[in-house]
Image (cartoon, rainbow, N blue to C red):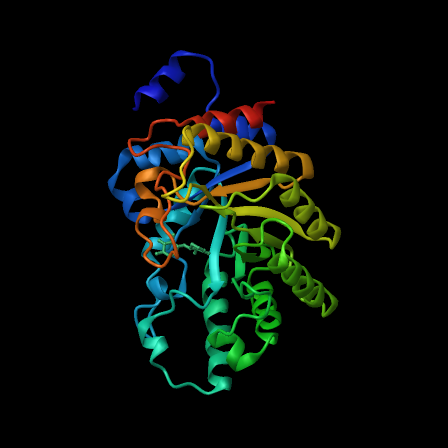
Amino acid sequence: MSLDAWSRVMSDEPTLRTAADERGFNLGAAVDPNALRNDPSYWKTLRSSFNAVTPENALKMGPLRPSPNTYDFTDADAVVNFGVANDMYVRGHTLVWHNQTPHWFQAWDYTDDQLREFLRDHIHTVAGRYRAKIDTWDVVNEAVADDGTMRETVWYDALGEEYLDLAFQWASEVAPDADLYYNDYGADAINEKSDAIYDLLERLLERGVPVDGVGLQLHALGDHPDPESVAANIERFQALGLEVEITEMDVSFPADDVPDDPLEVQADYYRSIVETCLEVGCETVVTWGVNDANSWVANFKDFPERFTTEPLLFGGRYEEKPAYHAVRDALEN
Ligand code: XIL
């Protein structure tokens, strides 16, 4: 047990998880199955501090499908079953995305009809398997480009915008009780991209597509979207009849523009987002990792610029950062 955790046992302070539970709030983390298996501090921190989980990569098509006719659910099961066993809210991420598809798939010379059948089978198999375990699915991830046009992905190129209709329909056929989400980045506040996503969701709803919610990733890596604008954005989606969740939050700074007190600035931003959620009735915030040592930010090679690499609530040795305390305070007050 870490010193932080031990000192809390000796005091009467609630853990982050208790504060979230008491508030009826889902506070989650993206989970790495290897850390879950190999690092007791990792799963103990996860279990005591969070009441929601999502596999960070294990449910993506590439990791799940080593060859055309096989699935490997080992890693996904590890994370999902951990969540179920520990009475956590489980988000499934993600059924349809243009990234992290299998290599053999990228080399496949399919017809449009074959691609449609392939996607239907994929969604039926994966969403069907977890129908009793996964509460909410990111059915489609990142379908809109940064300029607000539809992103030209393998799915869009073959099937047009209707691929979203089909994906949500197929998911609802096999997982009728799950909440079905559209998820994207860079659309957290009111801006050109979130305007386009708003229009897309409006079209889906008009066509009777079974979409329940919108996930705002909120990777606040360099830019920290204005909380008031995030609130207004959440409220306009809610006015369409949709739920909104913050699905992949992390907070860092451009590596060449770090404030004097980064941990405090980070804590204030986490606090303001959790407060915003509580005010507008968005009941879920998932951080994109458990602790800084496991964050994707240090390892991801495709960022256009460099960011500081301590974006989460727990430090590299699972120490509670100011952001941890800020989130707990926001949940308690
Ligand atoms: C990231 C993972 O964190 C990395 O480990 C992986 O190498 C790339 O994908 N938006 C998403 C997530 O929807 O799936 C991405 O996760 C981060 C950006």
